Image (cartoon, rainbow, N blue to C red; front, side, top):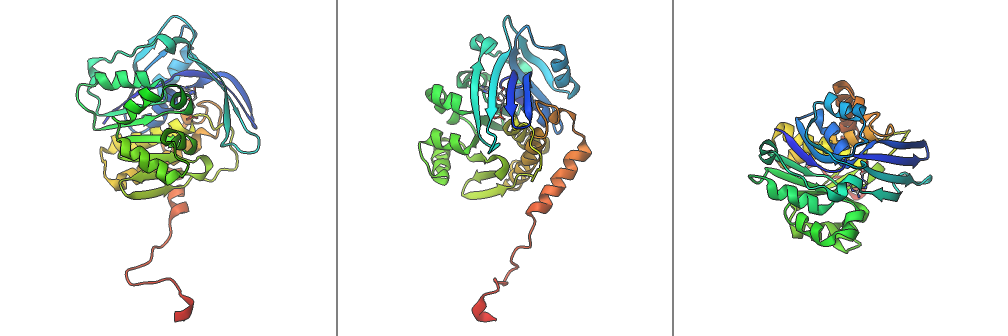
Length: 316
Ligand code: AMP
């Protein structure tokens, strides 16, 4: 099944301990669509400016991403400037956000887009996420949402209205806490689930991700990497692997969600191995599959058999 994504298509300027890049292709919808394109057809709804480069459109098209919903407007493409900590790659500061063409963008979905069965509301103004949701003909089988502090702090009310209407939410730890107004992570997630989503994924960077679904919790590890070049886009690539897997299999069972979380982790791990979409945009099926198998091995252990107990000292 296919996925529709609305989100940002951006030019990012980032500085990490490994170096820096200016005006490199980025954006939540870009990372998501390229990551999910390995598994399932994906259409993108977003806006770019007159400065959007032909080679960047070419990258999306070469991955079979359907771009009829990528509007080109007068003005400049969305810009984001980020700086990553030298001690801890998980911390980053947003130095600047320029909405540019997104400031006046109102998405209009084609009849084909309105009936997509899987919808991903990538990180963007929650007002735009709501407008996309409102235009869907039938309620998609799955609506997933991502956001960030910029919108949690700046558009709290609109965001609350989106959260109520989605099936699953992707957040990092800090976002979960500020969204719920609760410092304990588990309680924060429970509070968010009380608002609507039946599944919440808490992304924890190099520490992996937690999938909360109903009463159950599943931990997907991060793939252990020696060299992290640029963490930008890891979350969106994670979501691309996750939602891409669910859409490709059209299986929304709890087991399928767990596999999806592991594939998300795999796709996030590739994203950080290069600047921009250098790595995410040039993967082979063999590479993805090999890393998925390797990550399975990282988590595998023999569970206690029926009737078997731990080696209690007193019973030896
Ligand atoms: P991630 O590292 O997966 O959380 O996503 C980083 C991407 O989000 C970058 O490529 C940015 O262009 C994009 N981004 C940053 N701030 C915003 C924002 N306020 N709204 C939408 N997209 C953003």
